[in-house]
Amino acid sequence: MKENYNFYNIIKSLSYAMDLISKTLVGHHKRVAYVSYRFGLKLGLDIKEMKKLIAASLLHDLGIFYLDQEYQDLNSDDENNFHAEVGYKLLEQNYFDPEIADIIRYHHHDYSNNQNQLSNIIHLADRIVVLISDGKSVLNQVNHIKKVIENNKEQFCPECLKLFPELIENEAFCLDIISEKVISKELDNFFEDIDWKLDLDELINVSKLISHITDFRSPFTAAHSQGLAAVAPALAEKYNYSKRECKEIKAAAYLHDIGKLMVPTEILNKKGKPTKKEWNILRSHTYYTYQALSTSPKLDKIRNMAAYHHEKLDGTGYPFQLDKKDLNLSERIMAVADIFTAITEDRPYRKGMKKNKVEKILTEMSLSNKIDKDIVATLLENYNEINQLRIEKQKNASDYYQDFREKINEKRLFYLLKETSNELYK
Ligand SMILES: [Fe+2]
Ligand SMILES: [Fe+2]
Ligand SMILES: [Fe+2]
Image: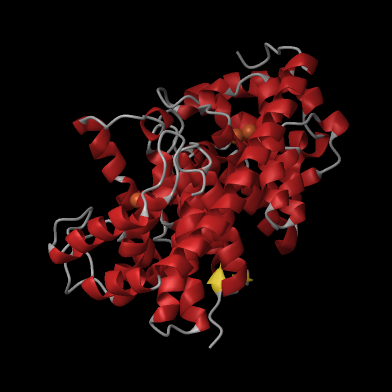
């Protein structure tokens, strides 16, 4: 049976996870999506354009994660344009819908040099959302928002500007923007009857893109999910999993650390042992993986494989303290594969472990009833073959990561030299 996944739900998962990274502007992507959506309705966009508009809005700032920036740093135009360019590059290189990549690329461009209508809508929606400060009533901020947009009207598309007063003077619209519940309901309703299916191969592609967003935040983890995406399906094959099941486990491997977006890079990049407090933050990543992937019952199987990778058979894992009666074979495979990948992969501050040490660690863990004995035996029986797959996959991922970072740095320098600072939104 060819089961289909809904693209909107996957984007929602990613958008949720991206919002975890910023403590100052949680919900930014959703808010921008909602404002864009309302403009889209008023402009009479057709369903096809609406889909693209909302998807692009929900992802528009994804380039930020490569720049170690928080949203509040993004007030000057040079950096704004730059993160848009980074997001575009990432999407474009990872076989994403080229139109959505383009919309994101231009989401901070002024109207005068931007022909892309959907980018123009997001540009204005983004500015409106950024101008709202959460500390005070949104209705008391309407005049200020109107004034700033009016003073900078040459930046925005005239068609949108025409509709802007009517929207912003509507109290319910303003209050909707700050209501997560309303936004989710409205967008979910919109997508309920809309066919936007992904098959499993497409889901794998989107999941791989997500793994770049989660892994590339730190050089320490740059190739981790890719390694797991080689090891876990290879192990599953040894258990005669069908092609389809192997693909599901692969998608889960790419997604397993999506919740790590909430871990600050200082903690991800720490060379020594984490403190107790840091450890608690790190441990919560699988909880957020679970939450991020809870966007559709169709994703539940993949979500569980992804989110239970730190659970242990004796119930001492996290975050749910599941035990052997709760954990199925695929979830156990993920747990073993994750440990194997983590201890064998090279990190910038240490080399991966050698075979005898890996054998010792995995055997001890299985004997103390932490991980599945049979899976460990299968892995050790096929050690060289599976390890070789991991090495190749991680080598490709590291090369891509290095190349991407270099290109970003070159381009960033170019931007910083070229752009002049802009006092506009201060
Ligand atoms: Fe942006
Ligand atoms: Fe934004
Ligand atoms: Fe993990």
